[in-house]
Length: 414
Length: 81
Image 1 (tube, helix red, strand yellow):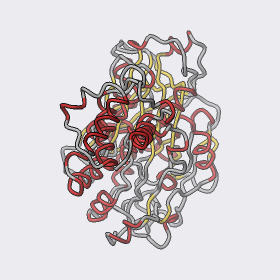
Image 2: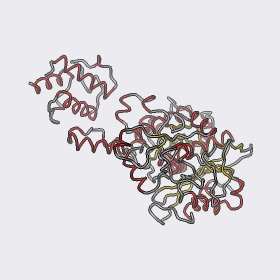
Image 3: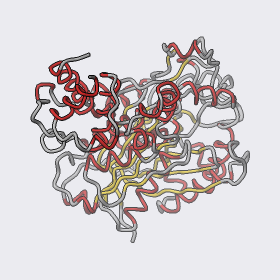
Image 4: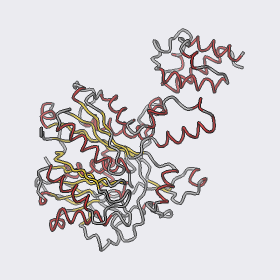
């Protein structure tokens, strides 16, 4: 069953804003969320990377103390973003049939703070001190479960786990739930809270993180010749997706259509992207085909663009293969230049930004692009937001993850 | 060594921290499950925190006998003794 799907609510908590309006306003002007980390553990462990992009608003500002205590930080972010999206859709307190409401909420890593804090507790204080809530707090589906409880979703609560592709894959799993006829409304998104010394040390040892410790705000610089790695970010993004009939019946405001999505896997290398971007190309083509969109319909891409030396080029290669000569007519935003890389939440936050781009006909800027890599001749939005014009058009949001995961969604203006 | 009033006050702080209930709602005659709506996982968290606070052991098999706040206060007072 193919039903037209629309986006009716948006939520986000990111390094550049505690909600969607603030995040969007800052994304248009260009704001770095990266800062030096002021924690004792940075010095204690002599971390080679001393900065990251933490959320602009701590969840404790909006969640109750018992909620904070019973949720891992990653679930806290997810719940904050999900509640904003749900309220934005006008569904807070609405009389919905819970059996027709689903959740699809992703994470790359899950409750890593809880897991490692509990391990410290076990070693230092013994097993009796390990909190009974440890397992539901550390499990990767913790956010999906908490959100389903929050909104009374009984059509299924799914969790995509595909590293940095997770956020977009969650939207595609939501699309499947809706197309299968299993739900009329799905609250979808992704969350991540991994700014912890262990992932920082591990990503740094992979040579994946920028070492620009003396200038964090300039560290995330996709497509720039001097890019030297990604900047660890944290936060969550959430979207309310519903069938067009369901949205129309309740008179909901529609931001954009979720027109289609495509998932592929590289089977090339556990971390390195396929140098020819073949898997990414296939995902782009699948997304366009499932959206019944022509290449020429696409005006904008919110790219994965993590700012790693090796990652940004194959993504360009894939875009060139999928869009051909039309690529020169597509404007590209690399918003990780502002937010850092939110891992399993990245695709969800970038999908929120892509939807806002189409709704406002205005693409956000890429910061820190001083000398564009000649191997990546894309039309990158810099300096000021790009006006997109009033025609019907398609915007693409793509994410790629360790494991060889490629996930692409296509949104259409309404 | 804490007297029963001190144990009640300490327990009320632990319950507030875990559930968000006001400390003055935590009274001796209140049932953890019926009146305070505390589930088994929260109860175990409260027990573990009480063990640490009052330096006592509350075996898992005893926890089901602690129906009211007063039961817990008595148990802790005796265990301290």
